[in-house]
Length: 132
Image (cartoon, one colour):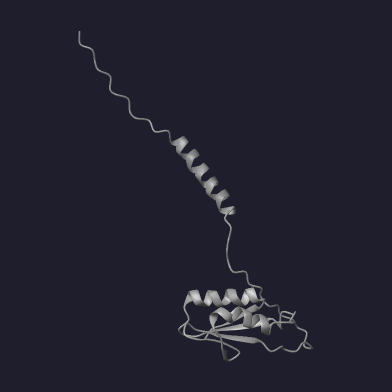
């Protein structure tokens, strides 16, 4: 007597477990993203006031380039930039007195620009940026 052979069972892929795994991965990345620490440059933005009685204080101007660095028109080495700005800001307390304008020259690289901004911030100045 010949017996009929049964066909082999079709493979079964449990799609429900794939959805569970995907959901767990999404939740993991959402939670992990909230714990990421941002090491960015914190800038204090100067505020606007409608008070006309406040006079504009003279600001410190830094002209930055890769070849030269000028503070209020005087050439300064990059290593002494923070100290020079700290000297100029001595005794100044208000935001308008601590304003520092950074003018970028054409030859200024991005890394040098960031280094200048960090030096101004460490010296206690408030950055006001201008593009040329």
